[in-house]
Each structure stands twice: as structure tokens, then as C-alpha cells.
Image (tube, rainbow, N blue to C red; front, side, top):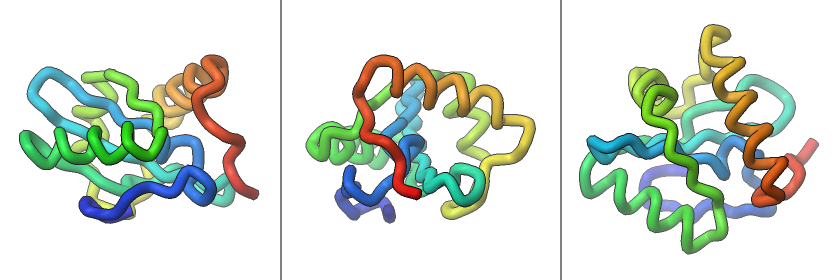
Length: 108
């Protein structure tokens, strides 16, 4: 998902349904397909962050505020896999979303 594309809940993975948005208006979208580590699919600050969150909500993609995780993920490039150091934090986020029943099962 590029910054201007609408996420497709049917084809995006669970983590793509997750956006972390800290107070400084930073948004990070993740894509997870069960074949590799989740990847950064969109990121932005300020108005771009607000637009990412808006597009996600319009598409029914869950948005979760997690400032420390968003800050850590903000240092990654688009389409870059999350590093092993963040696996646990992202797994907790995915688990939280699945427990709330807000995301479809990831493809795969």
C-alpha cells in the first residue's frame, strides 16, 4: 500500500490493518502475509499521517495508538521488514487486534 492507495482488507495482512499514531502525528501501516515478517506499507507525519489514518478508517482497517512502536517503526523504509527486535511488540499489537475481532484472518 503506497501513501495514496486505499488498503484492501481482503488482501492485506493483519498488521496492515494496524496503524500506530503517536501525539506528533506519526502513522505507520504494516502489511503481513504470513510468509515473512510484517513490512512497512505506508508511513508519514503531520498531514500525511492524518491521511493514512483517514484512508485506513474508511477501508475498515483498525487503527491502534502505540506511540513507542510507531516511533520505532518510523525509522524503517517503505517495504522494509520489521527487525527481529520489534517482533514481540508487533505480535502483541496483532494479537490485540485479533482478540478484539477487528481484523480478518491474514491470507496464507
